Length: 475
Image (cartoon, rainbow, N blue to C red; front, side):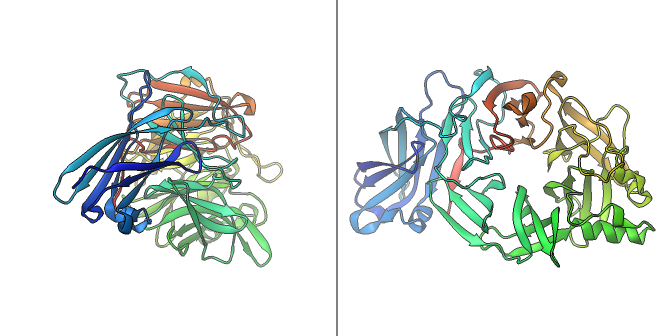
């Protein structure tokens, strides 16, 4: 196989994306293409490292056999920089052709005046044990924004559509759009496609898209007989075709449970009001269940198939605890623990704990005169063990940064894929004027701390690690 030559380097949808055209005979013998972007001097984040199987490039139309050309989508570039990109082409005979390509990129100015102007409160240093190098912020101002742990933007694409309800899965972003209601797929090469959501009663996506048992879990509003069920329904949908696989109406689930245990749910479950305020859900494979986060009330575990209520964990001084049926399924928290209050971003950690961003804001949509529970003046990340048999829980881990930051709404805390390290997004710190992005190593030491101007929850509604340092596109 003759060495490949670079015939063109073309700009993509933003300065962070480019297309490198390679020409060589024997294109059909290629098995994979790999590239790595050399980090800027003085930076700590590992290089962007991406491998493409030839089958993937062929499926996406990046292989033109008639002209012996392969186009390599290169994402994760630095803007306004002469990027040094090492490209390796492997053949069926296991031969590797290597070349270095310089990709000069244009400057990037964030039209929002936010993401290109971070304030570094603490810079990451070489040799730390942080378990991730890149993260994305879910933005209400446009596409997700990928940033490295040195604070440099490494990916964003121009779009007027927000990405609050989004998740990075299978090497692309899945985004729930509300006008119209549709599922948008946004690729890292900057291309996108849409499909409808197969549920006629869903009127919008709100809050999270989270991993499910089979598909993805989404928090949605629904309409029934002219009444809107605000933020109290979870659907599991297939991100490839938009079909709805399962649906859980928390109003119906809790009403049936309360009636079967002697309570009248009418004053608790209030269709047409934001009585539940669902903001996240996660699938727990340990017992085939779904855990939902209700900002107004609690986190609750329900059985995946039946929807039966398994347990509740929340502030017992709130309104929900005045109903005996709900109090009967309440987990008692061990002394010294912080109950989840106004929490967001429920997830399961690498060691099986239930983790939330513990905002600390009491209920705001309860009936007049009903108890709203405790409010705090700081936020925390709390991880709980639960004991269903004894209706008990314990706060096993907590990070509160010395009780120095209060982010009353939105926000998140998620582990890196390898576990232990955590990325925290304080969406509305400093009285809604700043978003803070903090990375914790496995020992809960602060590895970096970046600050951005806040636009409500829009700057970083929540944020998650993304594995730009090790990407594989296989098919």
